[in-house]
Image 1 (cartoon, rainbow, N blue to C red):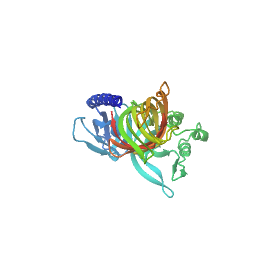
Image 2 (tube, rainbow, N blue to C red; image 1 turned 30 degrees about the vertical axis):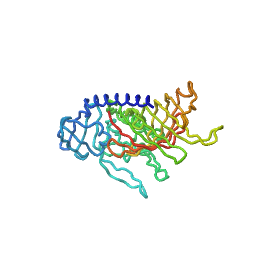
Image 3 (cartoon, rainbow, N blue to C red; image 1 turned 90 degrees about the horizontal axis):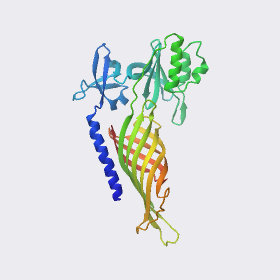
Image 4 (cartoon, helix red, strand yellow; image 1 turned 90 degrees about the vertical axis):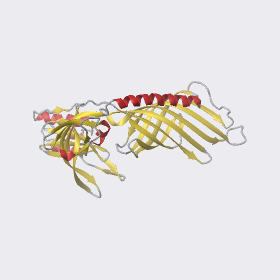
Amino acid sequence: MSNIRILFSLFFTVLSIHQVAGQLKDNYIKSSILLKDNRVISGYIRQDELEKIRLGIYYKMLPTDNQRTFYHCTDLQQVSLENGRIYETVHCIIPVRTDSLTNDTVSILASLLLKGKASLYETSYKGKDAYILVTNGQSHWLQDDEIIDGQLVRYHYQNILFSVLRHESITENDAERTSFNDKDLLRLVTRYNEAYHSPGKLIQADHRSINYIIAGLGGMYLRDTRNEFYLQAVYRSYFPGNSKSTSLNIGLSYYRDVRKTDIDGYANDVILTRNLLTVPIFVQQNLLNRSVRPNIQAGLNLSHITENDNNNISFTQHGLQRNYGVGFLLGAGIEVDVLKHLLLKADYKYENFAHLALAGIAYKLQL
């Protein structure tokens, strides 16, 4: 147990040094905004607020300023970031599923992907990725099919593509084969623009990774049979240029699993305690991009495990791939943001052995 404390102390010491260094960095990104009255203002936006930019922005003239000004998306024409990304205010009718398919008109600051005769924007709405296609001053909402209350809701984005991108060189089959992602949509819209001798301008942004430290604890108690406790710290990286839902995670985890079992040769049930220390490397795929995020996990780990009874008699099988070695990790869980830096989580996973369904609390810090 003392070695585990030393390892976690070392990890959090390194984390503290990294955090202090991170505080010295600028957490703001330089940008300029174009207002409705055509005034241009230069300033800074917090990087961790870009995920919520759809409805507007908080703006500072200098990162050190205490005062921030909020600009609603309807006050803005455009937001340009120093990394090349551009957001523009787009007005669009969004299909909304209630008892029947109705419409909802909204204004959104959307990320510009391609500017031309037909322009393509990327955004999200109620936790779902979406795109907006603009031609001849008309905005068209593109959303993939989804399951709501057990029923498949179709938004027919391929039909919209074919009806809007009308040219003899683009067939209905071309639209039907277009998958719901940046690459395929950009390819089709670019073909349409080129057919009208207007290839358009592709907006290239510097997609830097978004990194977090997540440290937490939790457990589960089953009366008289088994209980489990864990400590965990994870370095999580998202790569927006590839996916906003997939993260690479590297961590340090400690599990203490106490269970009652019967063993041949023992008159009474034996209480066994497993101590598992792992360094997991795994991919986590979020199934939703919102404050409640169900997810699945898969990866590998380096691990060390010991097992003793309540009389401290060892039941550990020593050797490579017995009490230490490389293992695999499979799991599913859910994370819920409750405060800016605080989240609740629950996981059920196999990591060296089948763990209990564990619930916990964690602190999340963006670096």
